[in-house]
Amino acid sequence: MSDLSQIVKAYDVRGTVPDQWDERVAGALGAAFAEVLDGAGEPGQAVLIGHDMRASGPALATAFAAGVRAEGRPVVEIGLASTDMVYYASGALGLPGAMFTASHNPAQYNGIKMCHAGARPVGQDTGLAEVRDRAQALLDKDEAIGTPTAPIERRDLLADYAAHLRTLVDLSGIRPLTVVVDAGNGMGGHTVPSVLGNAAWPALPLRIVPLFFELDGTFPNHEANPLDPANLVDLQRAVVAHGADIGLAFDGDADRCFVVDERGEPVSPSAITALVAARELAKHPGSTVIHNLITSSAVPEIIREHGGEPVVARVGHSFIKAEMARTNAVFGGEHSAHYYFRDFWFADTGMLAAMHTLAALGEQPLPLSTLAAEYERYAASGEINSTVADQAAKVTEVRAAYPDAEADEMDGLTLRFPDGAWFNLRASNTEPLLRLNVEAPTAERMIELRDEVLDRVRR
Image 1 (cartoon, rainbow, N blue to C red):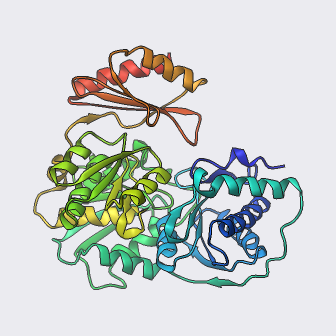
Image 2 (cartoon, rainbow, N blue to C red):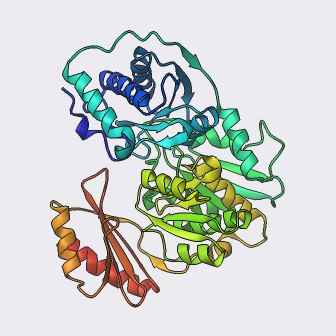
Image 3 (cartoon, helix red, strand yellow):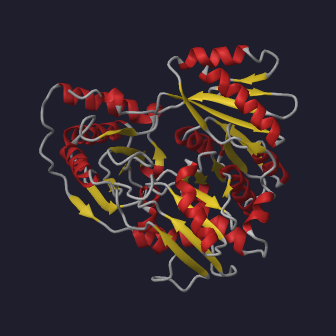
């Protein structure tokens, strides 16, 4: 018997195949998703289904589709897709959707990211817990799902997705750029040629140098997780070797994008958040911009300097998207390189953030390192993970060590110090880890505070 509490996380379904879940579980989740949509005021609509390049994806997606169809709902299969392609399809067609992916996780994992029509998120508080409970009830009965009688349609939306992104950022007038793109054998290898390539479009002034564009869910070159510095090494070397202007790295489902400058040095997601925010505020003066509480202190500073209203949110796409919708924010960014756009149904798309960065670079003559320096004001540790047996007790212990610091418990524990330094310590939503982020006005102060807190966490 499958215990769905082990694989249904805060924002999505995620687990190893076939030991934690398989086609039978996928079918139950599909039927449950259809039932929840009925109760959410979306009766009878077709469900969009896409999958990434993982070997288990097609069979799981087919089983999920059978569950949906057994509940009388049609299915629109879009086949191989990035996560933001499914969001595009959900927004453009006004249909709920399901994307089969485990994002940056290793090959034995797979998962599902679900959304309501218009790319509205399905998280624990917006239907996912109900999907889990209904699917668990079906599995506990040990009965097969009904006969899938509703129709199924297959559509290729890659060209439509690329065309829509091209309407949002015009790259035709920028200076020539050499761009190294590391797809990590993930879905960027499927989408980048259509969005940034010249095969089906008037020639863009971009020379794309591809790394690992072959779709391979075994990830033979490196993990498709650019948040880990070890997975950026190939891109960094290639940028320098080719004399490139910029490097882009996508995760497995290509909804996140990381940036490397012409020296091969990473540009922080906080700097990209501030850069894109400035561009969006130039088009939409006075708008709200969302950032999570782990982004650099420079982000709200720069948003205000460009006439915008910064609003802080908890980490995680369901929280960011909820705040985006509540405030009608023009843009949102996270430290994990998720970027959200009002023009993209408040959903996250790494590709659109990449296009904004290319436009900002190509519209002026300076190298990316100089341009990015305008948005990098503080020294940051990046996210550091520690395995801790009792996470809550450890956070309490760390809090007690700094009684005079200003505390914020919106998401984990954030402590701020009079000199401008701060750190955030929070439990992972998906793994048994404590995550530490530290920032300070100088590298020396950041290192001092980082090492001090890590010593307490790992003691």
